[in-house]
Length: 72
Image (cartoon, rainbow, N blue to C red; front, top):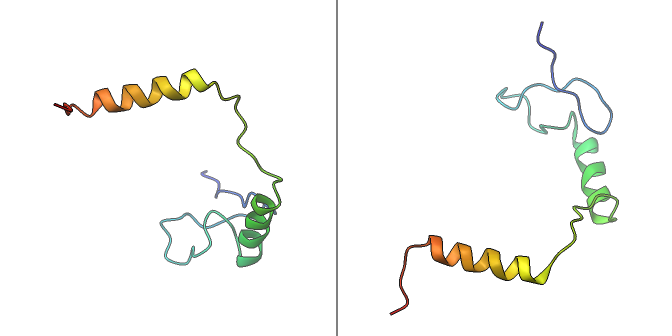
């Protein structure tokens, strides 16, 4: 049997996003959606990765080279 996904805040079952009644997916309610937003705003969630300046420059050079456009 396939289980319904759980709300990441309260762990209640959530209707799939393809369901027309799933207006707050992936959350079960407006409240849980707002709780998640406030956690992001308060800095409780973060995507942390050490940033090396050389890595940033290298990635920009690679992106420009993959565009296939010449600056002549």
